[in-house]
Length: 223
Image (cartoon, rainbow, N blue to C red; front, top):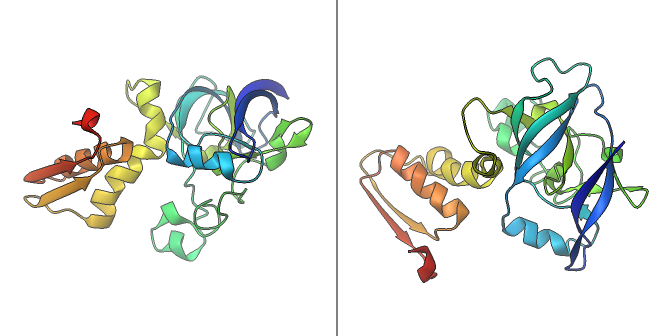
């Protein structure tokens, strides 16, 4: 195992930067050196989940080691980490809704706990005990152990800070417009809130061809 500094939510509203131990990857796992991690309100919520947890579910970094069965990634590859991995066998996956997998998703299957289909829980230890990783990733850490299926290779010249928020903020905002609202070209859109998700909703509206986009926010600094 290797030492890794990480932000640990204590479960009582506090957090601290602590030393953890991260295992070498098993056959279908990948060890990633985190270069950048995003922050969203869920990270704030995780401070009060009632248990210790490695914080962070948005991140991007560089592959450091891969398991024996991983053939699409190698050391040195730049990747974005994705917590919404599919099992491909449940009802939602079979319906094409891999983002809300009934087995792997920490949102639909496990609340804020560990769910199957992700790197083994014992792969991260804190104070000699296994510790859960937020959304099975734990990106506010020097290293993260994840399943190969959680890695999306970066194919463009994208800075790590920008790549890291694709993990949640970008896909939530863009996906809400394109996959849920199914915004039609030429239509109008009103976006309430221009934070991280809201800005990506605006981008999704623009890409979808909205004729008018009205953004509303109570924070004057965002205007």
